Length: 322
Image 1: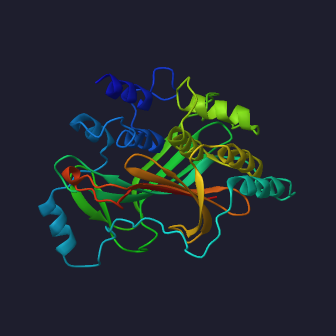
Image 2: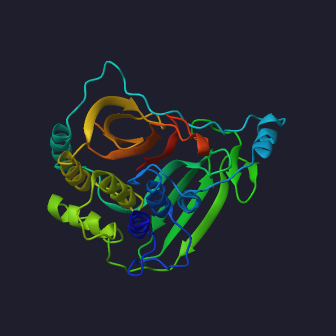
């Protein structure tokens, strides 16, 4: 129980010293941190509490069957398959990728850092007694000069343009492609705490920045570092210099190995780097010439029959766009 409590404390998405209100909804990063509880546990046993915290959707078998068997256009409800590395591709070491990114950052027309994000995500919602389902959505966050920002979240799956998308707001139902889940405008915020503050262009300072953004005083493990990268990209669209610094930091990360070329779920070509954990695999996809992070995928490598999870199921995937 002590290990479970410590994991919950470290995964707390709204700590008392954080920049968000404690009674606010979980953002994309908070959901990812809670999802990490599913496979960062020191033991194989998972409690109902942990699964309920990580759940983003619960759906009954009969209701899902009705949705899938009903008339009309076929819905985009199929879970994504894991990305596959091209068999004849040559892995590019992260050190080489970082060198490429550094050269790109020196170009006059290199992209600049911009606060805000555009991300497409797929997340597997599950419980201990209902079949899991995959919910795709797209989120666009734009900041204004006065410090205010807008957030638009829509239900869509770019793999199946124009097809209805499955949502679960208490009961499973289909919505039209592009259905607005939420559209909000937030007042000015002047927080200077990571990840609200701009990321530094120095690997040592960036590591400290990501550690602070993770609300921990200890050096980040590789899975925690990848989570922190996701949190950074959920707040900022990195420029060439920031991408080069991040690539250099990742080049020194233990257990993150190059595996070759992949085509991501938005049709972009990238270099893949994998980390093997206990019962899961994380894949980081990076743009080959600029070092920009394109996506991050988590896949189960062993089955969890009690939760309807099979080896090879995609737990979550995020694809960031300029």
